[in-house]
Image 1 (tube, rainbow, N blue to C red):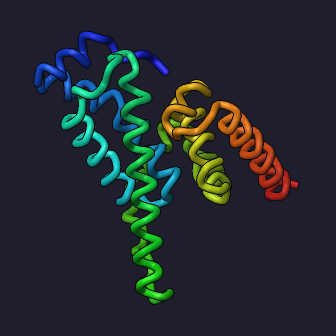
Image 2 (image 1 turned 180 degrees about the vertical axis):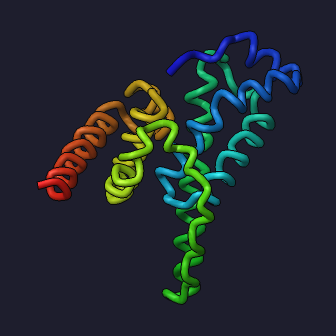
Length: 183
């Protein structure tokens, strides 16, 4: 993942709106792809990106190393995704399986198609969606976010060995799913 210029983060810290705009432009698609890939819910992913930037604006003073802005922002988004899972699990328990049918897609192109080839993205994401959340998270952070193992460990707050294991199992399971889909 390319490093965020120190002066851009410093300018944002000094309340420079154009710096915040540049940071938003730089990270919004990757954050959306990560949140959407993890939650499988486009609207929730949009909300998570917005909430992540709101938190980043509020807590930028707590960032000790400006060069770590990207991993720090993804860690915020990761925590927002976990909150989303907790909320939806609670709501599902309250509804006791009495869910409304999901609304049909609006027909808009999915922004994560820009990250992967448009032709194969939908099929690949359908397979990725079948991975357990920890494996899916590690894979999306590594592939879409371009984060190192150490950065993913920091974002997910787990040891590097756990990240390696999650990536290994995610790739193994994905390979098996792809082989079953394309005999």
